[in-house]
Image (tube, rainbow, N blue to C red; front, side, top):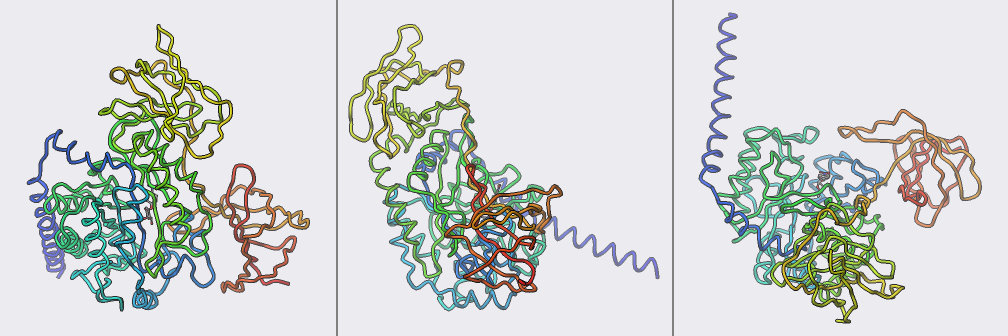
Length: 559
Ligand code: JFZ
């Protein structure tokens, strides 16, 4: 009896292993067929790298929720602080309900020609659109399952096809975001265990990648996300699919296991200065990637222009995100920012496209620079300039001419004969609030001296994040109060409280939202009284000057 059982188990294990090996051996043969030389690699990367500016689009069934479910703002309170596109998982929305949301995802105002034109007018040269995000919903016609725009929604038109066709028509590089690792909907990967490794899931991914890579013509970028680096064979399988069907296509670093063609920064962060190689920084216009009705934390046009300039000075592409509405439009705030960026790029694009970043690991107090090796021009980006003369230590080339890029105004400069130390005379006060750029025509090649380079260490450029504290209100005085309690952090999707108690001083403001949590049911209220010694959950933004109150929830029943 015992032996029989053991044999049975053994047979099962072996057949599983055989299937397992078989599944990946195919991937490996596909992968080994593909080789390229160093120079082929650089020429494959060139157009994307020269493009410098791209548009990221997060769009799907989650957009219909606008970041909110049953009164809770998942765009501010969830793990990662900005997870409107994570709402299915974070709010634990029942499958049947999310299926209904998909049915009602009916983007009748979607006009890909207009989307691509807006990107183009903003100076962007590539777009990456979520073909499938973590919720597993395919915006394309897929035979892999019925969880897609043709079968699960009443819209019944392939959203990806219109997008790709327009990109091709308007000369825009086309990219797909494809969540390869997390798929909360797929049966082989229940949503609480989001790292799929089953063979069934591998087959599913193979079908979908083949569809994306063969149904639409040339695809320039495959943008994978949230990798598990240990799933090397699975990551290789995804790479091999891309190489097989679209050998010129570029793969981002978030494929995992060091298999990508270029490096990315963190989430909503500009890469650090000084490193060589192909890079990309990604950034949101407000907090969230996906559309969020309650997210009014817009970066200004000037902030966004500065971020573009800073990342290009660091030798990095910059991809700016928009979360289109469930109807398929760009919110007006996005449009106005795209317009401002486009106007600036129209004038200053020469300092952005086809440039290299500064080789120095530090920056100047006034900014940094880019260099175009073909036209032999250096561009000084004055993003932190507050007025007055500047020096550009470490740029040792002889200069033939210096002028403002926006109006051509010739600038006086001097270089001392020995070290060529460059000083440029500028007005005492900077009149223009838009970021200005100085072009330098060089007499020869760019010569830089790493020893004499700039010595200003810029602060890390990353996105403001929200914090959440749960505690009791103390020292309540009119609009001002203190809350004393424990900060909430999230680990493996679960709220955990920091052990040390903290006190945060806050005051009520115009955009704060109040809520009452009655036995788990969250009710929004308009008029709201704060009580001393009652327990509250408070979401605030940790601004350097003073923390700003965002959401306050009374946790127990009010008196
Ligand atoms: C991921 C997604 O989970 C998110 O929804 C969005 O699509 C974003 C672009 O990518 O989020 C990440 C991925 C990586 C990091 C942070 C957030 N990271 O490396 O810091």
